[in-house]
Length: 90
Image (cartoon, rainbow, N blue to C red; front, side, top):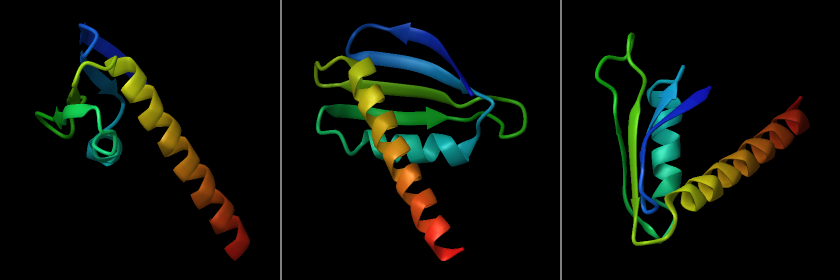
């Protein structure tokens, strides 16, 4: 997965998630909304077979990169917990 930053102004971050589709983009969007500093978090996927999600994150003044990093850390922890629980089943 690769991120391509299209615009960054401190409280606003526009980027593309190369090599991904609705699956990852949607879970990232939902996780970003868990942060109280998020004012806008959404993405557009023009065509699911040939384009990368175009994402926009806006905050209430907090650095958008910090909000993004915290969301990614929460998703990592969630995945680790899921993997741990799956290993217990098998």
